Image (cartoon, rainbow, N blue to C red; front, side, top):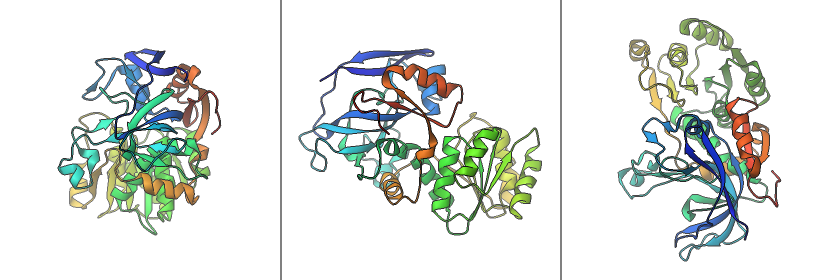
Length: 352
């Protein structure tokens, strides 16, 4: 078996390709030959800054958490998977059966293992072990790349569930990056009738239109109140739901002003710890503010969406690099080129 080439972050700005030992699966784990791993904005943030909030890099860490691969070896207690199975990986695994696990909200557990979040290694490598219960078998008509994109797609599913998207919902989505786009795809699949997308970038808004956005609103230097009026003008009414995917203070303000009284604002984007928002406006109009932290219980739904072709994530992948060129892949993502950059980890199979 060949070596385990891995993308390892040693410190802020210090990203290296290096060989690591091939791990052995524990009793409840599987050893995977990684195939496709997407690069996320959080991976780039760790590379540039060495931390995200309270999660601080203190030792070398393998990056990557949007992933799919093939089972090579199974642990002694694993019954539902076998060598050769193609799987998508859910990167967050509860360490304890705590109250959050029991309530079905394991993403909120304070002790959760999460790929490429200090101190846990990710899966941007040739070989990787993961808890078998958080590896989901892919149907034959779902590609490895689609399997890797289930991770960002799950953010969209969780956000739309938290928002209560249903048949006929009118929506405003702030930010047409990868997460905003998956929120759009899921919202449309769940029955949203009209969706306004906003962004600074005309190219990203063009991609949003291609993926089903009804209106694309390019943001200029305007106040939050003015932008909210623009949204109302496009829809002919204030939206029922706003999903905020940027984390920018001005966008959160716009989201609150734009949403109809009694509506819902879901906060997906993470920005500064403290922001100024029109809380009184939200309170007196009974606009609900709901947080989102990753996802939970979403992989089965995502796989069904992809297998039935109700959702098409393939257009999100705009760049591909072999694992040996992972540093170039990171630079491409850092520069904001395209939508989703995919790293192909199996040198014998570079297919989607």
